[in-house]
Image (cartoon, rainbow, N blue to C red; front, side):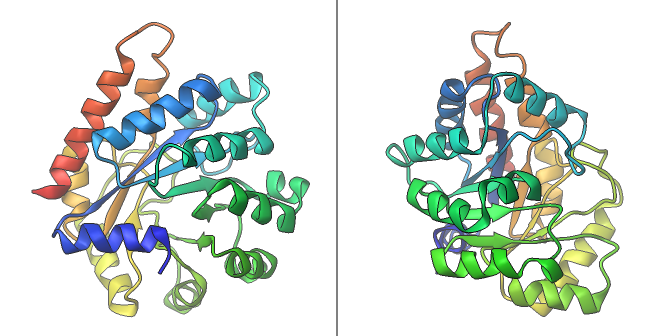
Length: 265
């Protein structure tokens, strides 16, 4: 069992739901990203998803796009993000998941990327623009390196394709409950629960729900059915105040703590 799945099973055993926190690497700086991730862990997050900045994101809303732009202006790239993970791995055992689009990984080289990610201590990989039908090379390398390859499903995913995704996904299945981008308003929470129940009837693998979850109330509602919730834009909005608020780390860990508390009750 991977470190990601073990962490989610541990949360499950405590009759809680997992909290996966997203941050953009290099926003506001790589040095500050390390502090942010450790502070998020202190706040109670169970796993951390680290975004690799990219110039042409298709799944990210305005908040995360701006964070990506800020990181790119500082010259943050794949190599520097892997160095960040290696640095963090010396300080924490929390599962670390990278989120990247295909192009940066293709440019780095798929095999080289997985080898270096393994060496750094990466536990999982999310690639939003990678369909499982075209992911043979990624799946091969993920199996070789024991890095979980996490795939996404959407409300529009047909049942037949959902079953294909379930066969190849490892770590957890990432369910996107809307057809918009990150940070979009979350609507139809009851239907989200129905869809998550349907997915869980098809697999014993953990199911995490992301996109549009921005409050403890959202987390609590979604956590009634999902094994974990993923929160990104709401955290990035606090991080973007770093230059003007010296207490932003305290506000960040306090918010993470409130999200986690909602997933315990």
